[in-house]
Length: 79
Image (tube, rainbow, N blue to C red; front, side, top):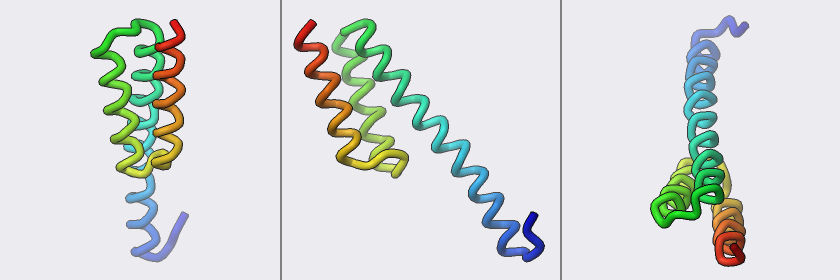
């Protein structure tokens, strides 16, 4: 455990960020699974929105989001 006040504060901030990032990551993963499962326009739009938000916040990189979206669209066109 940190002894210095600024280190304690930083630890609190990190814990908050971990929780927020985990929720954002889960949201886009669930949205992707739902889009593949249902193949509806609304689900695809939600997956795209979740990926873009995760990339914007920094949970995943921009190119990773683009790659995942590209693969999702490719999978849906094939089906």
